[in-house]
Image 1 (cartoon, rainbow over the protein chains, first blue to last red):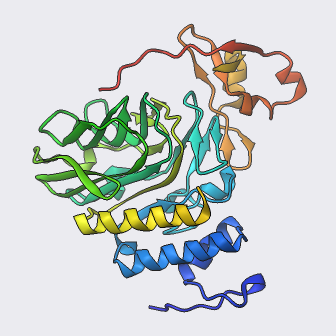
Image 2 (cartoon, chains in turn orange, brown):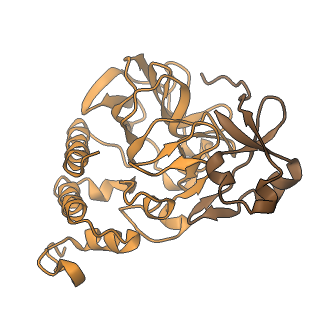
Length: 266
Length: 66
């Protein structure tokens, strides 16, 4: 794997990963603090073995619908690369934030075709503590759900199911901000994490199949069988999905995300 | 939240069309059956279109998330 790469143009003195450069070129960002921090983030993901586990990761940079839509893992402007399509009222000032009424993003990531049974994660970072019946990211078939969200002060992660003991972890923890990650690493292991640490009890619920969720994951809302609902007026600075993450993986990606946001001041 | 009330015909006309780079119109209905869009979306409508709308206080359709 190529590690060092000389970036041209106004960055001739900097050495970036090719993946960093691809993303920077896609969104057209030039701020050196952000580009340097992004490269550190990319190096961290690769060094910790996280890069290959992720299907999409959105750092929500650049402050516009056009720039925040790109997937760092594959920054191609197409649905198949999980480039977001934004709808309605969304604020892109410091991450992305739905207006809580009609704003959301379609990731074009369909669990039934893109996720792997019993080997999945969903995560996001919210900088807003706001009690509301709102979904940060998810899809629902009317009976089963692939989602992670805060319902008022109760945090939930549902992967394939939503009843207690059937693929859900939930608990009340009083603050909707932070890095939240749900990870299923086996049919009987579903964990929920906040800020790098497991919260709640590991779900050992019955096995479900990702084919039960043939709907794209929405950001800032729940895709209820093709209709966006439960719009989420919490500001998100990151969102991602991929293979199941270990406790160590969760701690590492949480640290990388928080270090990045701290460095760029959001 | 204050939103812009539009007609069903207007909603059908703009739904899914781009109003700003990479951002598409998403008219929705409130609990009274009104079609509404955000004020952000309203800013990008033409003067003829925008001059016909009414600003109303949004009343969401009640739905339960469990």
